[in-house]
Length: 102
Image (cartoon, rainbow, N blue to C red; front, side, top):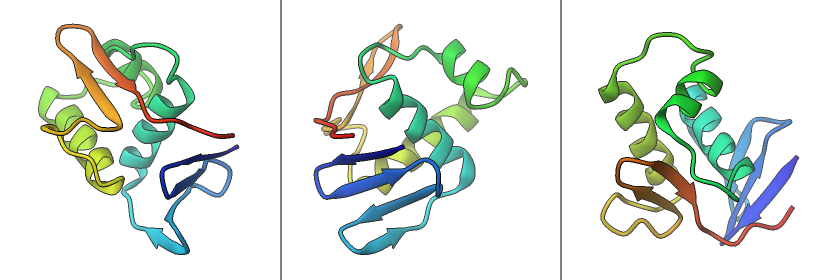
């Protein structure tokens, strides 16, 4: 599936993130997290959802999850302060709030 938002294109079949014509380098887990929140943008994604679906239920530290979230934000030009595309809802989870075209 190919998702476009702002000037980004996220291709889950090719496992590729592009900004305009340029490929954006992202670590595999960061890509998985970004794809998961974009695919589930209609709802809030909890920490447990991320562990189950991005880490396949393996034990993972809070710092590893936070690092991945920050990596996803950085890859799409977002930040924890701005939260333009990935919004944190305290004690609930994350939600992708950008306008996405499929």
